[in-house]
Image 1 (cartoon, rainbow, N blue to C red):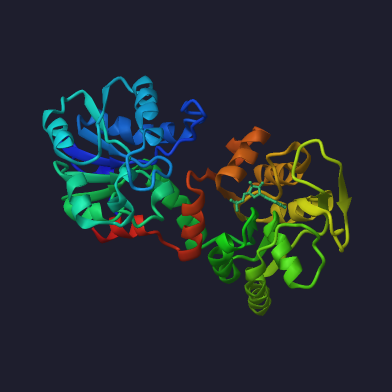
Image 2: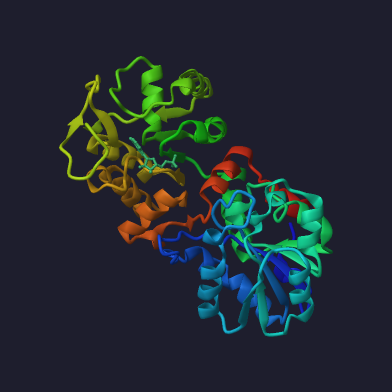
Length: 393
Ligand code: AMP
């Protein structure tokens, strides 16, 4: 995989793919600009080289048609506060008007294309759309790690229509860390998986069974496992159709000698809402009108012991409904233990990252990934379509 710094960038035209898929509030204000700031090292380096930059990104899910709600306008405003150059927001990402803008682009001007997903061809990885996107660009730089698991036109097909395609700082840094886990993890290697759905985490679990020493499971996904094993889980969130698969995974892990741990105590309540009465339960059954919403203190203690002794940690997904104070202690406890460990620690996924940030100890984490879905897919498949496209070029 080429690194963009190794290219002769002086005066060249670059198509820079970024992930500016920032969260917006009701009034379309950006509530967290981390993703914009994450690309600044690459952007600034390109600007220092006097490269002419055309930036492409998606934002939200506009379903393949123009929708002002998903315009990159707020991003263009934010970006113009962060870099001294003029930012021109193009009316679209392809077409005559955009071509004209590219032709007239000044040396101190950065063109930000309008949302790539306003066209259905983006998600279809369509060649002619990709060719249009690449029009006028000498090189392609991918700094959108969080989108690298998508085989979309601006991530994969576009690399066929430029002279060279390379990784930016962010993609390179992410891959450097993940390679250390994938290729030769220092042991013990502990994976912590949480969140709502088992289905999202099945491929990653299947890989971890081969690679990790232990997997610590929390969050709602635990109850699909418990129910499959015949425990009464009350109203807890369960993916009924994934029960058989959960049992198969447990069996496979047993055969490989990998230990999969499930919570030994549970915080239960009747409803998912703040200020509701809750209890700590140390044994099944969970009463019929209750649901488990967090791991209990005993589980935090037990999991923390594993975390303390680990040399490599990968964490994705919250241990409970961390958005509500009463059910946030499990996730916070795990976040503190991961932050306190001396291991190589990689945390991915918005919720786990938010939990780490809440502890104020994020500097202790070796690497906070900018891609939740991408990091899961990378651990599961050991590569990503976007990375493959760069490597093949
Ligand atoms: P995911 O996107 O699969 O990582 O799931 C994240 C979501 O899972 C968060 O919004 C949590 O509130 C939710 N979650 C975690 N644990 C539970 C639980 N025990 N019951 C219901 N939802 C949960």
